[in-house]
Image (tube, rainbow, N blue to C red; front, side):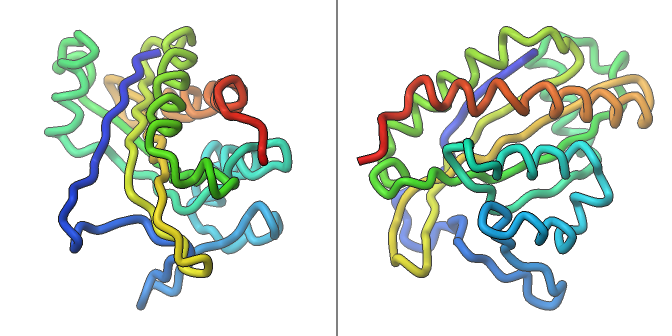
Amino acid sequence: MFADRSVEMSSVAEEPIVVIPWQGGESGTKFEDLRQSPEAIALVPEASEHPALGAALVHWNAAEAPWSTIKCDAFVMEPERLQSLCLEMDYEPEDFSHGFSSYVDIALLQPEQFTSFSLHEQLMYTMVAAVAKLQQTDGAAEFVLRRCFRLEEECDGFCISIYTHGLAASEAQAYARWADALTALLQPLPRAAWSVLPPAS
């Protein structure tokens, strides 16, 4: 599977960051701590609308996972992003006219890990290598490192946005390939993480 990583942050104080917990304003949605309250997945509309995403949230908030999830979404890919991803994957854009994507933000649980930029870089490198070994040729994963802030602890740190994409000649095929790609990531990503994360102090 195609995999890539990037860093999206700046030194500008006003730069938007991921906040834990977050509030959705008028939409009524908010952060749900699925690790502490697994039953709260019923309050995450994306989980019921997209079963593969719901399965990822359950798996990535399990007791053995090194992180908790923060936020997620699933959506049809914009034409410009679809075309650029086809070029990155050496695909002919006319053969892949539809795409579907999702993202899941994750934050490491241990404070010394949450605040380590170098550890997050190593973690992304390891996860990209693990994904590249997967056989799904019409799926893709991207890992984006972002700034993150825990309100209760007043702690600055980092989180990783895990983007998953499915590409195809039809909308239905793209959705199915996205679901297959996301399902393929469920076990390799935590396994890759534990291979580089130091023991909790």
